Image (cartoon, rainbow, N blue to C red; front, top):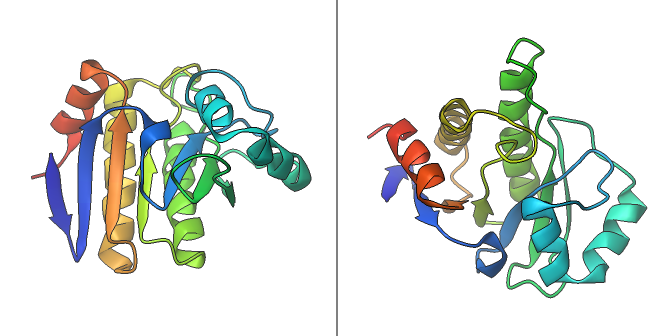
Length: 174
């Protein structure tokens, strides 16, 4: 599914983010940038040790922020490591931190003259954020950013499985 926002395309696909050919892919990272399971583990496995070496040099990233490394052996030239919040019921600033993780990922893309970026669904795996609420926050954050920043031409949400795709599809304003 595709929609046009300003001069940009926002797209939803069901797939594997490690196979994306956008200039950058976003990693659902932890604050220590230590690698892990899920999307994070898959990106490090496919991308190779160069990504982890760069993460070690950076040292860490606070929740709600994002940092950038090269893409190692991935098709994407860059990996933007975004740290979403662990969900504790939604009353500890989780919505704002999740929105910030998406916005800061897009800022890193703009700062590095990246015009295509692929996102996973941040915080909805091991961090436990309910997918329906996370999808609404993710899409609203990205749409708001694209309305103000024409330099990013393609934002693709690469969703793992039909349930995630349906949640994002339902949350996408048409």
